[in-house]
Length: 192
Image 1: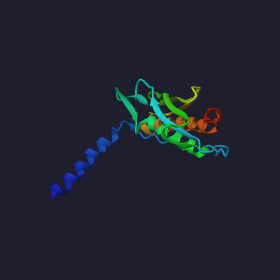
Image 2 (image 1 turned 135 degrees about the vertical axis):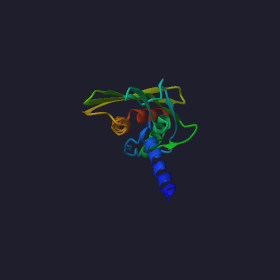
Image 3 (image 1 turned 30 degrees about the vertical axis):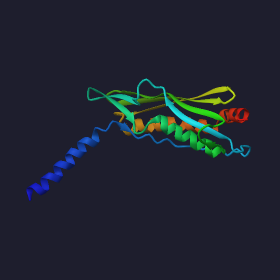
Image 4 (image 1 turned 90 degrees about the vertical axis):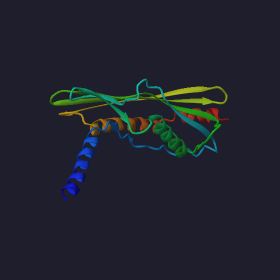
């Protein structure tokens, strides 16, 4: 009887210990879609992603005298590629290989700078994302989207607070991409 009680209890403690040392941030930004452009007639664009960051960490935090590296739950390159595909489809483009214009979405920087004292924390998140549009006629355009987000609070910056800061910054960048028409205009001028 004691074994039947002790084993599940021990397993629960082990799992609880594993859960508290999770160093993965669940990145799920809000995806804003642009208005449809009725002037697009069957224009196909190809889309791919790239991550140019030298370090894949989203944040490095000092916890109990140890430097803890926090990484994203999914590959940012594919996440942003998926976002751009949804936005281009919402505008009215078809997405596929051998498009009239090749779009590459590049993660230049995405990092949460976390500082903690005994009673306060500060998180400053910076994002720098580029969309490189290359037309078959050789014309090229680079559009940069940059955002900074800062938050302060009492005590320590836990993973959820850091995740919220990163998601907020990414959501702002995605909203800027949805509202910006420069890439759309470049495609319309060069897709012939």
